[in-house]
Length: 120
Length: 117
Image 1 (cartoon, rainbow over the protein chains, first blue to last red):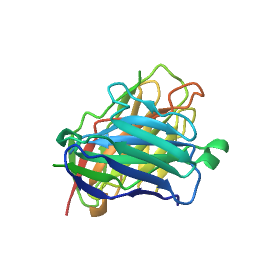
Image 2: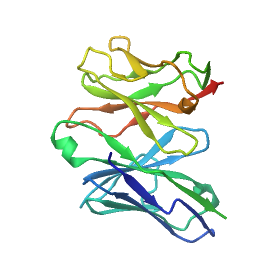
Image 3: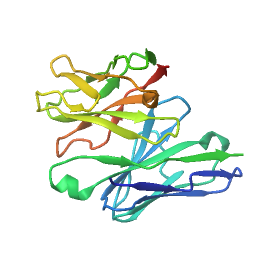
């Protein structure tokens, strides 16, 4: 089956620093990737939709200058948390939509394993 | 805007028994997808089952089946012969199928399922 990887799986950083999280589709092309945030024992909250070659679409209330998203290729999207603060500590999950399935009329999103961010 | 509601924060079932998780949603659209995702302790999201709204037949995947009631906007998940590995957080999700519609998944609050041996 299709695999989506995230790197790093967990990261600890100091307050004020920036952290980059990578999301890769390993065996398929994804024109669209999604970034979610999940608090403990809570549901997934969509932060932004990342489209290859264009600007990301952010959900209401998500600071685009705080959470920078770059989708430079059909297999890679990055989320950079800039000037991280303790309240940014969370579990971040990406998902990717398979372009070939989409073109064939299907629809499946594949999720990455998530990245746990702890800001001290 | 679409919303998804899971009214059962926690459920438990004896191993080998059957359990049903509830999900209701609200939408003005007629064409959409509904999903059930499983999130085990590893936190990896796993697709359990998918239903296209235009299909009247309920989707099934081995021990997992859904009861899709479009008029009632209800989409419950039935797990038969529950196994210890089924213990997880289960999320119901909605996605518009309209070309101009939002392509994002809308998740419910989740139901934590415990399997008792």
